[in-house]
Image (cartoon, rainbow, N blue to C red; front, side, top):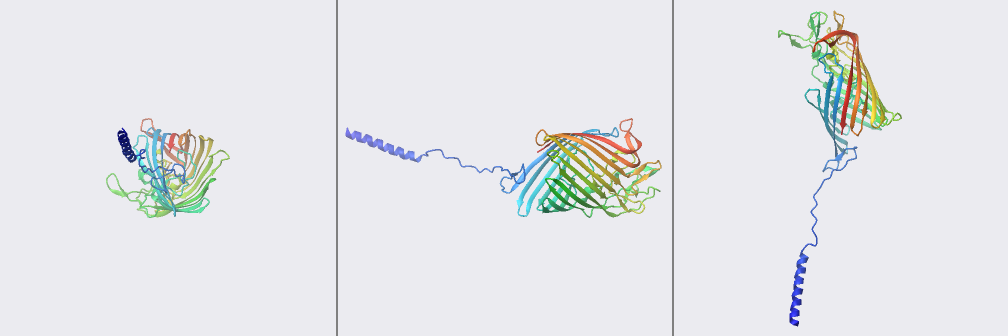
Length: 465
């Protein structure tokens, strides 16, 4: 009996020892999985809202943004062939990459835009693409003649250098407390105004091409400089520019018989002009600024831009073909210079103009603006002639004024819904032939007048992000 009990106890002890040893070899709990490497997006507050660190980088930040804009536009028509109502859509995408270096900020910016006006095809545009490194700026960016800080709110055209984008190399000297100076070499072809291909008219049996210059090749860029001061109070900027005017000469064209003939003739006797070729230099100077007026309301501001230009019409806000399609024998393309048909000298177009506006915030979500511009344009003395019928033809001196107002509602951040009305009028020194609608579709008649005006209206929905 004792022997049996001893054997039983011994077997139980041995089994327990084996079981205990096996249990010791097993894990007491489930092992945790190996953690995967995750690079989380981190907010970069150094450069403002919307920036974040590029994953894998500890010093480079990026912001991705864009815009969608939709306009319904009414422009008073002159003939039945004119489109009075058109719809316009634009899409924008942009990236802004910044890195702090021991030499200063390194910034790379790209903005790409696509747009469609009416039933026309979609146009793609590299709006901006530039590099900033310390004081250096290289690429396509707003001209340094302009003042990009102006709080303009207009949708329609005003006559001033309204922040055009050009390709340039520039260097900015920062003196502290918002004071700086910039010298810039800018692409001059962006600033050319020549109307030679659209200036033909005829009278007294003579086919005349008035004396707008025929631009030749560029040998020097535009030289632009500014001195500016900016702060929370506003900004003040003095700008200057030099622009090359290089005429290639009269050249030759083929007539109906296929013969080469001079491209210009003397308007007095109809004789061919010599192939003049000359070089002059236009210039422009501008003073611009804005002033914050929080006493009237948070966000309220007044702005103004005044310019005088000689042979550099683009710096006064005039494009190549201002109004040329709206008049009969009058060509109102604002050219940089005209050619004196008697001695071949280039006579520069002189323009002085001023633009400005005021914006008031009724509430943080609702604002209204009033704005306008005035310009006086004087072509060279041989820019226009008086025809035997007693009206002016060629490039007639004129003044132009524009005035408008709009209101915007911003129900949520980044969304703007606005309505604008603008009126523009040109007053000519002499009587000109205005093209007006005829009785039949696609036809027109001419009438003598000394002023031409039109009204424009716009509705806009825009989302920035």
